[in-house]
Image 1 (cartoon, rainbow, N blue to C red):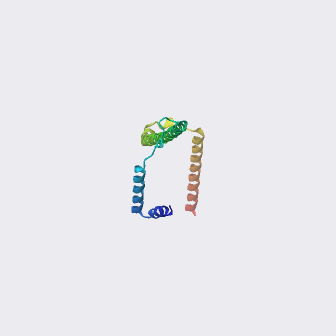
Image 2 (tube, helix red, strand yellow; image 1 turned 90 degrees about the vertical axis):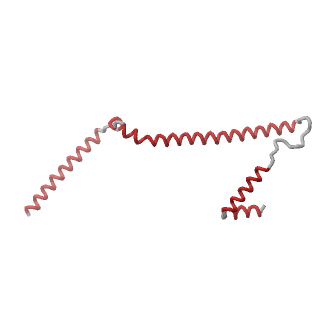
Image 3 (spheres, rainbow, N blue to C red; image 1 turned 60 degrees about the vertical axis):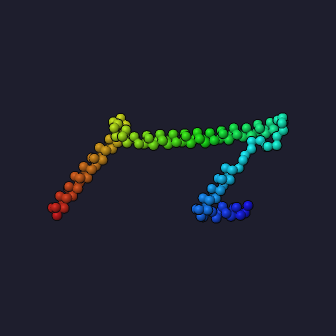
Length: 138
């Protein structure tokens, strides 16, 4: 067991050993024979064997349900991701073709602030012109 652990740790650093270890594990799993019921069965099914069959069937149903949940979750995530990607693809075309007046409602406060700033800029320009006139006289 320690040798197997040591082999697994060393194979992490060497790619060829890791591939070989994975190949061996896959072959080992593929060649293992799993039994639904033990081979030593009586001719008539007993209560213990019935319980064993029911437990194994229940475990199988739970495993199938978990597998289906994983597949369903993957499919939903893929569907949502693909829909998001598709909507992003057409977003710029839709946004550029839309009427911007409908998308952005004018705000009167901002319009008033813009007018106030334009007035300040005009006042500063007039003051600058007066300063330039004073400098030219001196």
